[in-house]
Structures are given as C-alpha cells and as structure tokens.
Amino acid sequence: MWLPYILLVVAVWACSSSVIFIKDSQVPPILISSYRLLLGSVLLSPVFFRDLKRYRDRFPLRRLRGAFFPGVVMALHFITWSVGARMTPAVNASLIVNMVPLTMPLFLWFMIKERVTRREGLGTLVAVGGVLFLAGFDFDISLVYFKGDLICFVSMLLFAWYLAFGRKNRDLPSVWLYVVPVYFVAGVTCFLLGLHFEDLTEGNYPWDFLMILGLAVFPTIIGHSSFNYCMRHLRGQTVSLGTVGQFITAGIMAYLHPRIREVPSGSFYLACFLVILGAVIALKDSPKD
Image (cartoon, rainbow, N blue to C red; front, side, top):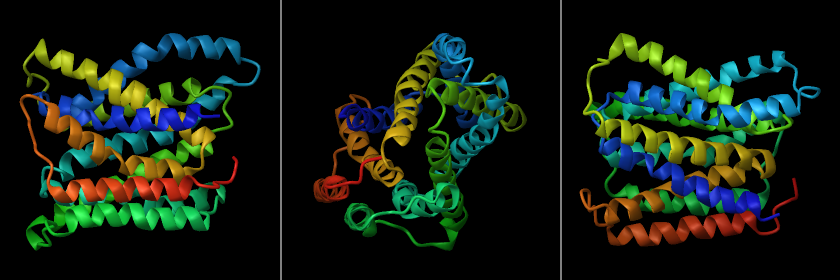
C-alpha cells in the first residue's frame, strides 16, 4: 500500500540528482542524454527479458511498438530541456519546468479521461504557489530570454505528456516491459540527433563515464522507473505534484556538494513548506486507484 508513495519520494530524490552529474560532466547535453538512456536500457535488459519470458502469454511482441512514441517524446523532452535551460536564466527554467501539475490534468483527461479531484486541485494551487513565490521575485521577463523560455515551456509539456503515457500504459503486466523499450527508443533518438548537432569527441574520460553511469543508475533507472511505477499505482496528478519536489532535494544536494555549495535563500524554505503542504492536501482522502 505504501510502496508507491515511498517510491515517489525516491523518484523525486533520484531525478533531482541529475543536475549534480550534469554539472560535473563535460559531455555535450544531447549525447549525455543518449548515453544515460542507452546504458540504462542495457543495465535493465536482464529484468526486461525475464519479464518478457514470464509474461509471454500476456505481452505479445507487437506491443513493443507502443514504446516508440513515448520514447520519442521523452527524448524530445531531454533535448529541449538541455537547449532551453542554456538560453534563459536558471530561475526562469526552474519555474517553467515546475508547472507540470498545471498541465498534467489536460493530458490525463484527453488521454485516459481521468479527472482531477477538488483536493488535488487545491493541493496543486498551494504547491505551485510555493514555486511561484520562490521564483517570482527573480523571474526575468525579457524578450532576450523569450526563445529560451518558450523552449523550456515546450520541454515541460513534453515531460507531462511522457508521464501521462506511463499512466496510459499501466495495464502492461510489468513496468520493465514498458520503461526499458522507452529508454532504448529515447536513447537512440537522442544519439541520432546528437551526431548531427554535437561533437562525439568532447568529454573528459574516464571521469565523464562515471558521471554517465551515475545518470543511468540514479535519475534514469531509479528515478524515471519509479515515476513510471507510481503512474501505474497512483493518480496522475499526485505524481505530477511529486515532481515539483525535485527543487527541494536538488537544493539540498547542491548545498552539500563540496564543489557547488549553493546556499538556499530564505524563500527556499517557505517554498518547501508550501510544496509539501500542497502534496499533503492532495493526498488526504485521495480516491483509491
């Protein structure tokens, strides 16, 4: 009963660690996205083939085609985020990507007809209000950053869309039969685009290999896999609210990291309180799925 909630917290922590690994790497952003996804799919291949054999009567191979579109959407999210976040101030990018709970209800409704409850709506307003408070005073509205803000907004929509696909495909007998093909498709998509736009020789190996391994294990295998598991067992809006909490764990890790040492401002703590309060409001008396 409590496993999905525990894994949601784990997913938030694991995915927020990606900024640490990326900051410590010199590999171009599209290619590093490709490497982490492809390595993640390789590391998960044993459980994929185990479940493919275990559920062969319930999972015909033609269903693998269902991973293609979510994989492409995931790849485009990674790419647009890598590009957009470099074209606009960090506070703008962080605020925009944390708007997922405001757009998730639209995807849930159009894809699976799942409605947001009143408590989920109230919790969403409180949590997003915390994010707005944190970034509101620093958000830079400027035509100079408009293109970057727009790309980050598209990236946020793609992330919400990708998560909604996990909800839509919750009928599959195993989460591994879904996420491993999705990671592989996303990795190949990023690699093909990276070949065109980036330099394969850039990087500081073998250190960068350790960063890629960290990205594959923590934010990809643990983080995104847990998010997709949660989308199978929790309501979609509950999971989208959980994604907002990434700025909390990312802020803590950035402060503790010996080479980053970013000290949170006072508004950070109030924003954390509002995000957690919003999640509690949404979870209280949440309908059973």
